[in-house]
Image (cartoon, rainbow, N blue to C red):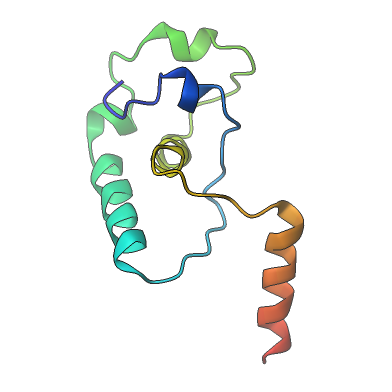
Length: 99
């Protein structure tokens, strides 16, 4: 709730993984990463202390991965667009060819 991720516009969109992140260094992305860190350092959010049962009862719920959930909510709130898996693979391949 503190993140504002329970709204349908956020909660009904696919969850994003934060295990591989490509960012262009801009003031917008720096602010995003600072917010991500700030929320990830908040024990109430990170550990889901006293969290709502809604999360556990939601369709498709598997497990809570706080850092990725925080990333996903902030990403959606800002209206950012994710690369497709194919686009991400292409970006990694391009980087490898530069070596």
